[in-house]
Length: 215
Image (tube, rainbow, N blue to C red; front, side, top):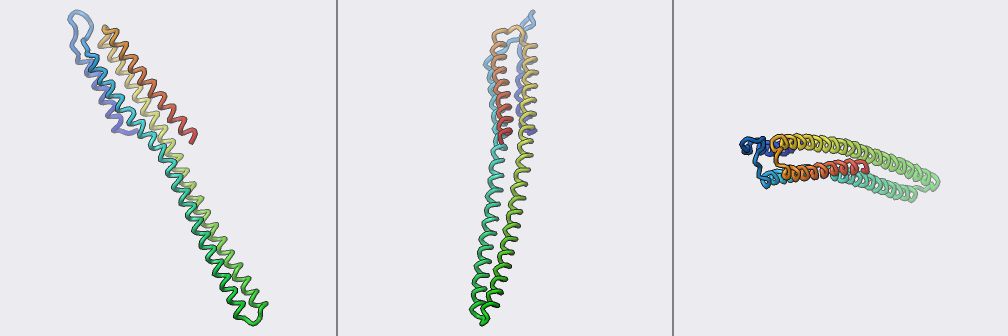
């Protein structure tokens, strides 16, 4: 889990707790005086930190396609280069074979030499192509393995991030309720606001899981 991200989120949650804990108490009753606009400002500040981390997690998912695409392109280039070299070898062999036929008086012997040259060239070209395809396959397999690990790491990171934030938001709500039990209307607004944020976070978590499952 990204330590800096957790520190930012925890810092905002701590601001909320400290604000409620440090609010002025009303004499003779177990109540505190809270400015709801200040509390809502802190809640907005928390929301600003969350999407940034969710966006970072989605960016890692997006890079998966880039890695596989780069590996596929490199594989195709290797095979194309091997095919081009193989064709060049075969053409050189054909020219050499024709030259051999022209230079030898015994046509049958010259033709046999030409066939041998072409067969050797074809065998070498086939071997080069197989080696290129094997190398391309290894590159693709390595890229798929790396992206599979990245996908698992992203989902693990997202789960840790959301679970941590949800747990801390519940703790913050409990602290707010303990220190501000008498302000019913304000608490209902805060509860609805936090509940909406928690629901949005849960939906984002499910979307990341679904995106990884489709990949």
